[in-house]
Length: 301
Ligand SMILES: Nc1ncnc2c1ncn2[C@@H]1O[C@H](COP(=O)(O)OP(=O)(O)OP(=O)(O)O)[C@@H](O)[C@H]1O
Ligand SMILES: [Mg+2]
Image 1 (cartoon, rainbow, N blue to C red):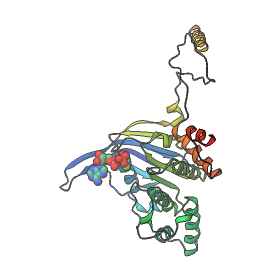
Image 2: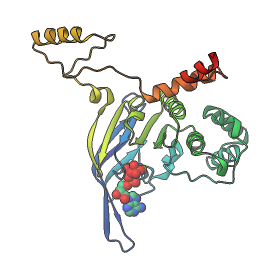
Image 3: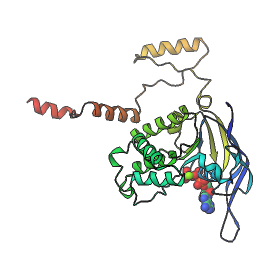
Image 4: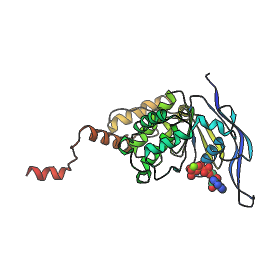
C-alpha cells in the first residue's frame, strides 16, 4: 500500500526528571510528524535538540510525558514491533570481545534465526558494509568508522522494514560517508523506510526525501528537501571564465531586464569532491604520486 504511514507522532512531549522525580529538562515539546512507507526521513538539529530522544521514544526505550506515538501500526510501547525495526544507536553498545561474525551471529540468535540463516545473512552483511578483511578481529580493535559499519550490519540483521539510524555518518571518512549514503539509498530501493538523525546537512541532503529540523525540542522546519533547498527568487548562470568587460556587459543586460547581479565569483570544487577524486584515482592507478614543481626542476638538472 502506498502512502501507508509507518511512523505517526502527535503532540509528543518528553520531560526528563531527576532522581527525585523533579522536572529537569524539556527535551521535546509537542512534536508532531508522520513518516510514510518507503521514505527516507531526516531528523536534523543541533546538539541537544531532541533527535536521539525522539528515536528512543519511537523504540519504546523511553516513555513520553505527553502525546501519542504509533510505529508500524502499533503503540511505541509495544516492543514486539521492534522485531521489524533496525536501530543504529549513536554510541556503540556492541560487545568488545566478539568479532564481526560472532556479533552478527549473536544478534541473529536474538531474532531466533536458524544457524544457516545467520551464517548467510552475516556473510552478506559483512561484505555489504565492507568489513570482509576484518571479520575475525575483535571489535575492541576496530576504528571508529569500522565500528559504525558493524553497527549498521547489526541494525540490518533482522531484515527490518523500518531502519532508524542515529548519526550514521559520524566518525566516517568521506569515502565511508559515501558508502553509508549508498547503503541508505539501497534500503529505500528495497522498499524500506529509513529515519535518520544528523546535524550535518550535507550528509542528509543527498539521501533524504523529507527532513524535519528540531531546535530546543521543537520542530522548526519540515518538508521535502528539494523544496526547502530551492531558491525560487534567484537565477544562477555558470559560464567559462569571463573578462571584466564581459561581466560589465552582462550587468547591463541584467539591468535592462530589471534585474540586479548580486555576486560574481569563480566556483571552486569542494574539498570533499577533491578528496574523493584523489582517493578514487589513487585506487585506480597505484604508485602514482604528486611531485611538487621544485622537486621536478631539481630532477631535470
Ligand atoms: N537521560 C537523560 N536525562 C536528562 N536529560 C537528558 C537525558 N537524555 C537527554 N537529555 C537532555 O535532553 C535534551 C535532548 O537530548 P538528545 O540526546 O535527544 O539530543 P540530540 O538532538 O540527540 O543531540 P546530539 O546531536 O548531541 O546527539 C538535551 O538537553 C539533553 O541534555
Ligand atoms: Mg543524539
